Image 1 (cartoon, rainbow, N blue to C red):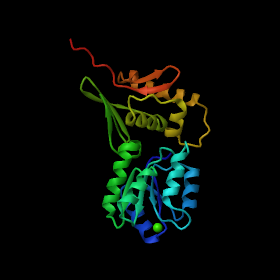
Image 2 (cartoon, protein in one colour):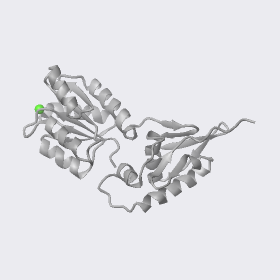
Image 3 (cartoon, rainbow, N blue to C red):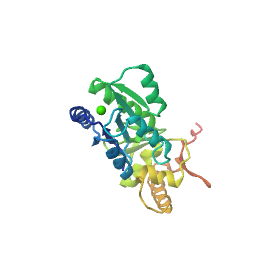
Length: 239
Ligand code: CA
């Protein structure tokens, strides 16, 4: 799983350490790399949820690495925050043009970095955060691992297996969009997994069964020939 797993690419050990400690305190799992090559290897093994990428690295610039990730389909959507000691506006523009989602100029406060990381994740991959998510009567709280659904105003707990929980978390953070089976495998099971697409159907079925207890099974829609979508149930007509 990629959720909550961040990569810090920084060749200055004291800065790498400072960033890592602060991100770990904020609840993230942190991997580090001191060179562009090492970073590329980490990302090739498993996509992290976000990369904090220093501009000046000993072997290659962070900008070049960011451009490369943006040019490849597997890493196109990888959230990236660039770090740099340079403050010139032209450099910032270059960083953003290379596809970085945000940009921080050194020195920065660790609190600012954590806030920016959370902001980028909220925008790009909200399933990596512990924020509770809700749609209609259905609510999922990653910090307590509880799913509840209000039926006639009464909260009802829905019990889900770990895969169904991750699946529902992903769907709730990306509602109203159609997800193909391949996309769900990538995002929920993790990339580089070799699982048949039919497996998705099995877990969707289990998710619906669990949600049917609270009459919410209809929220998980099958879109013929395309995949699945989580949609709000139509409001019940009063009276
Ligand atoms: Ca550096």
